[in-house]
Image (cartoon, rainbow, N blue to C red; front, top):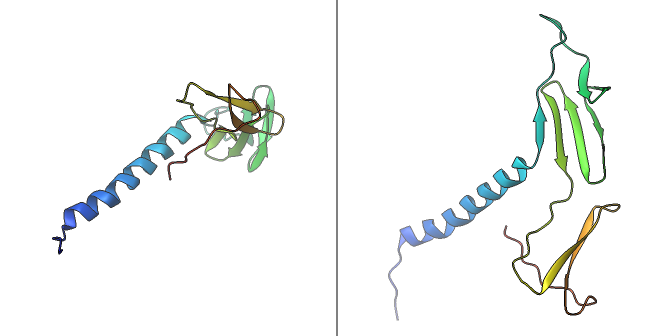
Length: 122
């Protein structure tokens, strides 16, 4: 049996993943904290980024706390989580976070030794 080819259907198949990944990128970037450079005075450019009471040099990277990475560039200070914890919709699963190793696992509440299935949207 022959089926008519529709170019609109193929565009819809292509458009959905593009929109979904764009939305996911927006959500991931929304978790970052961005601070512009603080000006010392009129016409005076700072030598780095202020992180609390500490002046960090340009092009430096550090971890102020577990699972957080900060970068200082001439554009400013950016701090982002290095671990994005998933949201669980199943009532029988829980997320266990190891903040020392910046990892997580998803396990069943009813049997702590059994892992829950996880799906990733690409």
